[in-house]
Length: 103
Image (tube, rainbow, N blue to C red; front, side, top):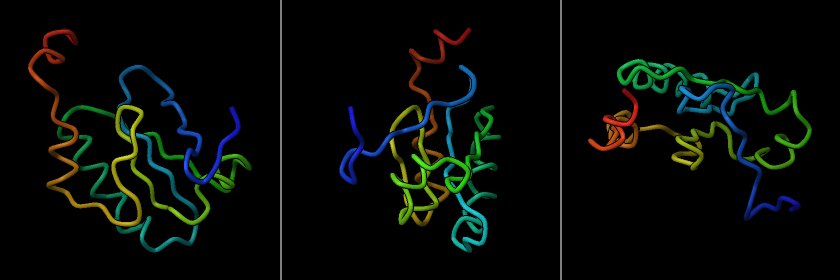
């Protein structure tokens, strides 16, 4: 399936326990502001963050060129451009049944 602006490719995390993928690029001031927030909230729930530079992958650059930073949680786009800590915290909160399954 080809990607389009409406359906960009969502990269998979590098490991099963990684819930957050962060798309960024060098020189992006919004990316620099958001990354500490994303890392802090991911640390709070015990998840690592996969940080991907879109300029290192032509497909990612094509799909996400004008959207960075992008926060992807569990395979779904959570935020673009700006990240609110409270909303990110709520999105990272696991339902009780998923907490049971992770043990």
